[in-house]
Each structure stands twice: as structure tokens, then as C-alpha cells.
Image (cartoon, rainbow, N blue to C red):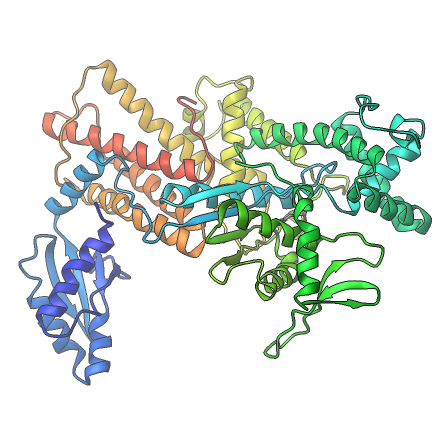
Length: 596
Ligand code: ARG
């Protein structure tokens, strides 16, 4: 099965060929004027320009050749040369039946599937997840699922921050607090280590103290830098201590991500690239790419064509320590060796644009990345509070993911309590629910959070508005869940009554026809979302499907419909809507509860 766009374009393209205009014309798009047409083709204007003729005549000639095409109810021409296409109802219904019997619900794979590494999440060991990491996880997870669902071979890697100065800071602070730990003994050797009796929570307060102290105290900072270097040189005590708190932190991170239904294929960190650093740096030197600058080793990456200054890429500090760019470059070496990917996608907030520019240029210049490897940086904006500044806790601290999840959870509990007095939509959704339905609360909170994020274009900043995100009305996660749950409940009732499913019939009303059109657009929308790396298209599509479905639901008494063929057709259509919406929600990382 092909997308509706593609099938319609094939017909129109053939008409352009038959009319003598060659094979480069005929692509269609959803009409800008749905009062006039479902789809339209604007290529008559392009032909007219290329062949110096009248676009209206071109459109007329093409349209004449489409009059008998079974896909169209009508084909008409509007000045200066728009070809307006109205789809035939039988044709639409037939496509719906194909979608229902298709294993992939009519969703088609992308044209050139390839191997993609998605580098997302990027949490730092010993630091709690904050909202910046949250967006990376939400958007990255979606891009990973989307690319994979559309046929690509995708590897999602968390790329832990576990090797830089922050590790030295944590070690320094642990040493200050517990100087007698075995790790700090000069005679420490492997095997002497003891289990650290600190919790993830302890670690999360150790790091901010350390980072604050280092800012104020140069001696402390020097110590932390020294500790970083010792770790990178695998000093036995530091290394053993690091391994220990790594474990504590990673366990906690995994639990947080699980709450969010985010999961990674690999849990590599910056430290895993260490094995590749020495050879890589040697290569940079022997290849004449790297040179010393004020004691540090750098690779120049500026180009003559640059309009803004492009500082050199820092590879090694004067004290010998490796930097953020070094680990990113060595990770490229590792990924090329392990997967030979066609693409690597990186997701961080837009403040790292310069860093990735430098890294990509350096990788290409030095040849560690093959010519064909495409680096793509997918930056995103910040999640702000209502004051327009990055979201903070009430007392002004960094908003942690766990705080956020708790907030969503509480908001849901409030809603359950107030549902008796709330609007009918909400109380219907929450009928029989109570705040103790933990798993449902998690799913609703998750949907609210993710949808509230993904509905905005990736690069935009947006305001975290709990009430809006949690509402059961409007363009929200809960509204979508509620719609799918409504369909599920209808289908359950149908089953209890022993009602039968039948082939999908041509639409009996405009609303039903619109519903079919919306569902037919979904496949194209997934492809566009992948192409443009913009999950917000999927959100819009879901919202449109849900809105039209709910209109259809209010206009019809589906289960009580007397005409059996019609009712059976509706049941099949309902099952298709449910599956399509669930599939799209799954791509967004949103799971649907059976009941609410
Ligand atoms: N750990 C980094 C941070 O918190 C993000 C890592 C992004 N990925 C990468 N390959 N550099 O800023």
C-alpha cells in the first residue's frame, strides 16, 4: 500500500505525461481550500513557466485526462491553473479497507531506510535529571521510534556524561566529606573497595555543593581538575570509587527513564570512548591536523566562508585532561566501528550548537568520520515557567524530573477528586477513577507531559502550563487518551452485545468522510515528521483525528444504529481509528490505558 498522496500523485503525474508535459509534474497536496477540494495540484503553473504557455490551458488539458480516474468524484480547474481534486467516496472507503487489512495500518516505510544512531537523553552521572534532559529524552525517544517504525535501523544511545570535570568534582567532595574512605588510601588496590553507603539522593546534593565550592575556591577547583585527570588516567582508587557511584546513579537514572517510558538500546557513556582516545589523538597529530596552542592541543575548524568566529576544537587541555569534544569525537570513532551508521542525530538544547559544529567539522576534517556519514544536530528550545524563564521549583531551585512527575501525579489526583463537579467530558473520563489508580495516573501524567512538549515545534521554547497540559479538553495528551479509551469502551460494549464487524462502506455523512480523509493522511504525516524531524506534525494529526472522531461520535448512535451493514462498517472503522491513534501515540512514547 502507498500513501494517499503518492497514489493521487501517480494518477495526476500520468495525466501530465499523457497531455505531453513530461514526467516531472503532478505532485499533489492537501487542499488549502477544503471548501473546494480535498487535494490540489499546482504544477500547471510550473509547466506554464517552463514552456511559456497559459497555466489554465495546461490545467484544463490535465484535468480532461483525469475525468475517468476512479479515485476522483470531480476534477476541476481554478484560475490561474489550480487543479482541484475531490475524492470519490468509494475510493476512500476502499482505502480504509486496505488500511484495515494491512499489517502496518497503511503506514508505509520511508524511501531510503538507513542506519541511524540517536544520541539523546545525555544525563550526567551524579546529577539529577532536570528539565533540559527531559526534553532530550522526550523528543529523542520519539525520533528514535519514528525512524525505526518507518523502516530504519536505529540505535538509541544515552551518552551518559560520566567522564568530565563533574566526575572530578564529585570525587573531591566525597573526599572532603569522607576522607577515610578506602579509595583515598595511597595503598589502595583493586579488590579493596567497599560498597559505598551513599544514595543517589546524596550524590545529587554532593554535586551542587562541589560545583558551588569550586566556583568560589580556586584550590578546590584545582583539586577537582586533578581528580578528573587521575580518573581519566584510571588511578585505582578514583576509578573504583567512580565505578561505585556510577552504579548508584545509573540505577536511579534507569528508574526515572522507566517512569517516562523512555528506553535506550545502549547505555554507553563518555567514558566508553576512552579506549579510542589515544589512537585518535595520535592520528590527529601525525596527520598534521592538531597543533599546540597555549599548551593545549587543538584542531582548527574555521573555514574561509565563516561569517562568525569559529574557535578551534579543543582536544586536550594543558594538564593532559580530555574534554567534552574529545569524548564526542572518540565516540564517533566507536560508533563508526560498531555500526558504520549513515547518520548520527544529536539532541540537546540549542546552547550546544557551537560545540557540535566544532565536533562535526573536526570529525570530517580528520577523516574519523567517513565522507558519507551525515551528522545532524537536532537542537531544541527550553521549557519555561509562566514567567518565561527556564522552569524552576517554587523556591527557585532547578526543577528536577522527579519534582515534575510528582506535580503531574498530584494534579491528576486533584482532578479525580474534583471530577464530580467538573465539566461532563472530564467527569465521564474520570468516572470511577480514584487517585490511587497509580498506573493510570502515571500514564495520564506521562501523556500530558509528553504531548505538552511535543506539540510545540522542537526548536521553540514553550511554557510549562500544568493546568493546560492536564486538561481533558483541547489539544492535550489526556484528551487523546480519553478519546482512545472512549473508542475502546465502545468496542468492548459492541463485543458484549455480540455485534459484528463488516467491510467499511462509503461515508454516510460529511463528518464520516472527513474522518476517512484524516485517517488517510496519517501515513504521509509520519513521513513528513521524519523528514523534517518535527514530531509536532504527529500531534496535530492525532488531534485532528480525535476531534473529527468525537464529532462523529456525537452525531451518531454507533452501537444502536439500525442498519446492520452500516453499524458493522462503523465498528471496523472504530477499530482502525483506535489502532492508528495508538500507533501514533506509541511513537510519541505515550501508552494508552485500557480504561480510565
Ligand atoms: N551530558 C551532556 C549535557 O548534560 C549532554 C550530552 C549530549 N550528547 C553528546 N554526544 N554530547 O549537557
